[in-house]
Image (cartoon, rainbow, N blue to C red; front, side):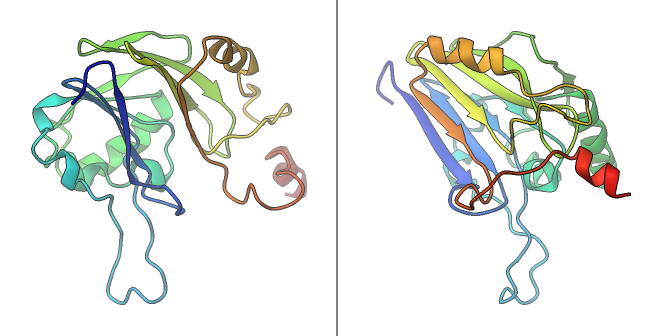
Length: 215
């Protein structure tokens, strides 16, 4: 791989709803963001789950420094029990709630003792390998304890922000950290990986608080 180049590779989740998994690679360091499943389409008879295609990583497992998880939904953590062994059991970093949900899955697959889980929180800074500085920050979603990530490399700053919205009346009481987004923007990021399901639809997504009021 050419020096001073950051490679960003979707193994799932690009142009589809589900199986989110993205690879960030600089030199001999690889960081994975999310590892989710996709539920099968109606024509996929006999298929229970659709997993990301990890062919690209099969001869690079020694270079995988970590798996970063944004939140605890199936399309972001559901593939971990199915793929983590094939990837050499790299350490996993996520918030307390996300790790709690993942722990139950690992227990079902008898992988609890083989996977190293590490708790991170907004505002932390984490060095991975020789080339990555990870900066998690809080984002609003329909599940609490969600993160976005800033990934700084010698090539520049990359941002990974999935399933988020600007909810100023979040039930969690902690809206998306707009000040962090502004700060990242001032640092001239070279790539932004983000998604927003149904972003092409008119209108906006109401706060989760509306659901509570309905009950």
